[in-house]
Image 1 (cartoon, rainbow, N blue to C red):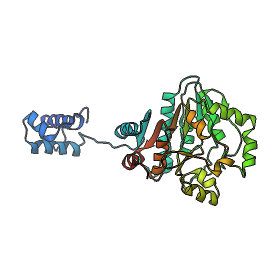
Image 2: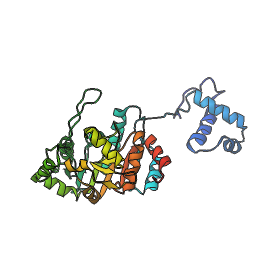
Image 3: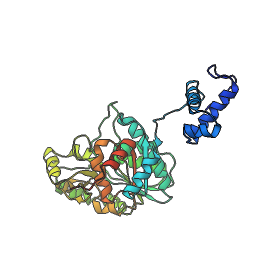
Image 4: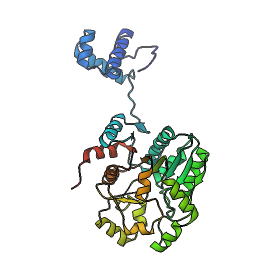
Length: 332
């Protein structure tokens, strides 16, 4: 409502009616009173209350603004936290038709949450996902902390604008610059051609050091992928035969290379044998795990991740949050 008006809008009889309209609007929009309650309280007819509310809207005395730039959806945040027993749930009310804008909003919220839960001297684990890349780019103030890489490097992709993604090494190094702490990273692919190559790489000192530290991470941040085209960078990197094989074995979701069935049970697959990434036991050892999923088509995968018990904090958006609340039914 306008704080000051020098002249009554022409639609009102005069300043007294303008003030009355403002009072009615205040009671209705800010105090939550019904039109019937206001009419009874002020000794007016319901018709007059309704007319003055309409005039207040038309003349700009009341201006209702709906923002879609990352406002926290408090109701769904609370319901998600309670439904899935999470430490924290942050749901952002923003449009989901533009992935770039959506990732930016989620990244900003995740950066704020990370700043809230990390303490000086902590160890932060980072997997790779575009939403995590967005989070790191927007991280500004964090306590001094160490950062460890959880997954190897996938071939860099370009978005619709032609901008190349950062790698897993880049996001770890960039966040360490913000935290002003050491970065434990390694230059190795996420997937290698065969199991023997993977075994040899896992024995490299920098990878051994990173994986050993990952188990004692205070906070880790991961994305959630669905086992379907366009829903997981790991799915895209797998061979066609592996995609079919893992789907038949019940893989529904993946987090940092950990494959899950619909009930959230971690599955060991042939893909794990040629993967350079933390395993389910190391991910389970992390004290707090923040997941940042987006896209309603990932609803089954996110439900699987939540049922796993690995995720303790969730940052997502309203449409996916609502889908999770609606479709949270035991699998059969």
